[in-house]
Image (cartoon, rainbow, N blue to C red; front, side, top):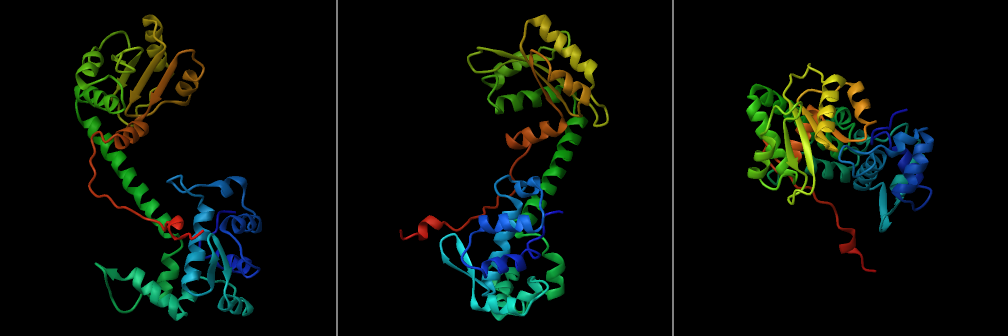
Length: 311
């Protein structure tokens, strides 16, 4: 079974909160058992890797019910059902969701302010409850993560398209810029002098691993169309060149992808050979700001529990 959305978690969370003070971690374990979640589902993280999906959805279920007056926090990190929450449970509801919460005035006020604010000015009215129920199947953080991943995916595709459209010389310079941004080569001048040597039997260039030049990394760069998969023969030729140079470290970069046989092959070598495909290449470019620039930065803040602690 997949992890329930945060609205589907509202009723079980409230039931557990009605039994006494509890914590998200305790509730998560019991809900995971109730829904028969697998070990992988229990540990599944948001794309950011900073929080478990189940914990995030329980947090938002609890948060919304708190705004509806069904749950309260008597102590830091703990929550419990209010009298209103227990009264609602006594009515044996089949489901608790945003549509039901909107029947409570305190939640309507909160929801109206949070969903219809425009430059700090709150409008009158709110979204129809039916629209809310259809739209809010994911938590706000999940919506942000999904939107970010969609933008990131489009950016990766744009980067690869532009790289393939440019010349091989441009691609070599891109690799120089990226390696220097990652801390290799010492400087653009030093990196260009070493990486610019092509035609050495399957090796496009050599770059210092550190600024002192204590070790060197041999580089092969192939600017291929996405459908042109790099197989084991090409990687084998590169490894043969490493052996000829007495090298122990190599990086093979392509704008396309590597076959399974190629990846299995390098995993059994004595030499340390790293394969960087188009996806990894664009991820590194984005991470190290090569060929991209920030168009908009959005900062999200959380409550600082330590600030409000009087212990």
